[in-house]
Length: 168
Image (cartoon, rainbow, N blue to C red; front, side, top):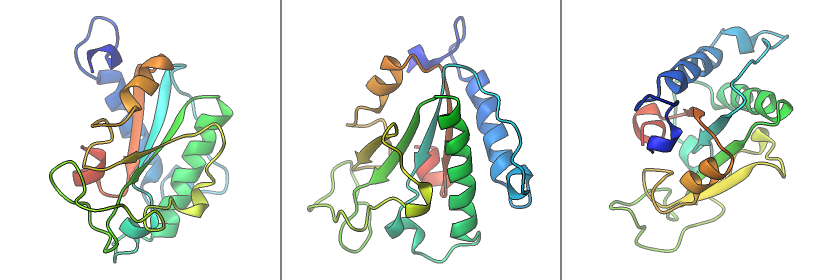
């Protein structure tokens, strides 16, 4: 992933800053919770990656209301779209029970209905939707090629489960 790093750097300092800013927008009661969203200013080579905001994963009991998280994610995606920046939506192929199997490949056919993205995300024709079959959205998908093809150097990654979906 060296090509994603800013010139002369081997890590994502700029991307980390964007991620922190995006997380601040998603915090309950944060700026996005207000009626008028803050102005979103991003690097011209940034992309938004939304991970696993889908029915099967968010059907479980959660601490944060799912509708509020989905609304914040939609508003952030709208900000990227308005600036004509790439929006990537990552779906997890799930088994009929909603589990993601380990290792990488699922042991049976995925259940498309359970991996449906939340309708409130308002997926647009310009969005890039990928299906992952393991923990990482980069493993065995075209995500890295897509980001490289669009000359992306900064990513904002959001999802509901930071320790599983976002960090992978």
